[in-house]
Amino acid sequence: MQHLYWLFGLVLSLPAADRSWPLDSPISKSYAVKGGKASVVAGVDGKSLALDGAAVLEVIDSARMTHKDEGFSFLIWVNPYARDAGQQMIAAKNVYSLNQREWGVMVDEDNRFRLYLRQGDWKTVAAKALPKLGHWHQVGVVVRPNLAELWVNGKSAGSVKLTRSIPHTQAPLTFGGVNDEGRIWQNYFGALDEAQLFERSLSAKEMAALYRPVSVTHKVPAAIPRRLLWDEGSLLPKTSKAEVLEGVSFHVIKKREPQVDSYVWLHGVALAWHKGKLYASFGHNKGAENTLTEEGRYCVSEDGGKTWSGVRTIDVGTEADDLAVSHGVFLSHGESLWAFMGSFYGKRERVHTRAYLFDEKNGKWQPKGTVAQDGFWPMNEPVKMADGNWIMPGFIVGKGNPAAVALSAGDNLKKWKTVIIPRSSRVKNMWGESSVIVDGSTVVNIARYGAKPLALAATSKNYGRTWTTSAESNLPMATSKPCSGVLSNGQRYLICSTTADGRGRRSPLTIAVSQPGQKTFSKVFVIRHAVFAEGPGESHPKAGLSYPYAVEYRGSLYVGYSNSGGRGGNHNSAELAVIPLKSLMVP
Image 1: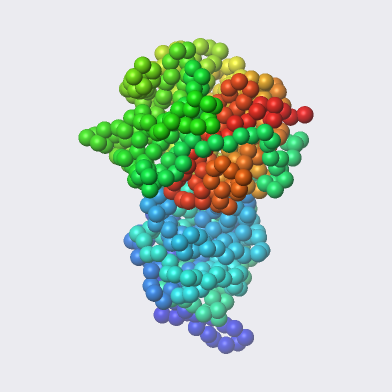
Image 2: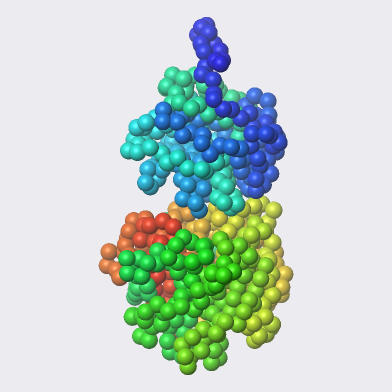
């Protein structure tokens, strides 16, 4: 079937879509709303759906769509409500955690429309003009056998050559975000209307003919004031302008060498100084992340991190009941060294925390059982508070993945109470790996967002028992686990990737610091960049330097972190940076 339209007095035919979605109701037989809320608002013609920044529309029985050898064409009307909101996916066929990557078109971190296509890695093409908030734009994708094109408002915005076919996977077609095995993210905040799929590549004339100007506009929701983590009187530097720390020494804790030991996955370095030795633990897996073959492992240095022992095991779990033990945190307390390890059954199900006590006589870790439940996974070292309890920051796997802490019963480290930190009503999808800053009875929790490259912050005034909501702060931060604390000189610190233009990129590895006694960060230093030819450690333009963990010892801050070496899937090496405290002073 073809549709007719008028041009210069002539009646011309429009190509008919093979599949179309009016997107005028949240209730449909052709798609399901997941994760958040979709509301009916004014559309291009009639009604459209406004997504709340947490919802995704998943098209039913769509795995085989866009798989024709002749290519395909896709059109959708979009009315964005927010800039600087991370990657806002408009339409996609991706399930990243299952390595199902095909294509996606989004409002990207730089606020431009951008098309992503899987070609071994991602190839992209972006529009030059920025979208206008509250206005309708028609975004189109045309994929030909050797070329892919991005269209905006009836005009070609650019193209990229294809050297191979786009993968054919079982990923569903989604609008407004990605359903990544139950994790709803890369959410779009705004309205969508009239999605159309053509199982062939349309010509330039056909693409131009399918566009018509639209005068309908939407009132953009007002922005909410953000929590203060960064001193607004200080300039947050761009990556190229950020000062690189001097006097830092670097070491490799565990090189990635699957050809030697068969381990392909490593993540979640934790550190502890105990009786003059430096311990480092991490999750290790010969298979994929968050699977039964995950192990909690560690190694030891007797020379301050310069050289390391062979890798040893804390716990491998039990195959009989599908128990896996992964990365966690250390605590050196008195004569004892504790390890609290994130653990799960099957594929990251029934997550909990297990405790282990190191027996120095036989060099073995003694299991002390489950000490925190409810999905709690510890992320940073427990901190002793003035009320006599310890507070261990982490997050809950499931239930929206909020930030959380575990509180001890005094020095009884085998009994912890999990406290979930509530989310702001505007924070929908998060992956709340968190850290804390303790100041008397006041505790600040800094958490990974997930939906945006922005730190979330919450405050407790009663030693972590109750909390304000976890809400957006004024500090950009990559979507990675943060590490924070207070140095012995009174400076607060936050280690992650925080620069003015870093967006979601996990490099450079940075440390934000305050002046001694101040409550907001005012200076950012680069610990190291992704490209690091002088070494040691891996150097690659796309290296992810992530999941930092820090301990202070004798005038230095020891920072462990994962280095992806430009690989995906958290196929990391484990590395160490040793920072003299004097290098972190702010004038």
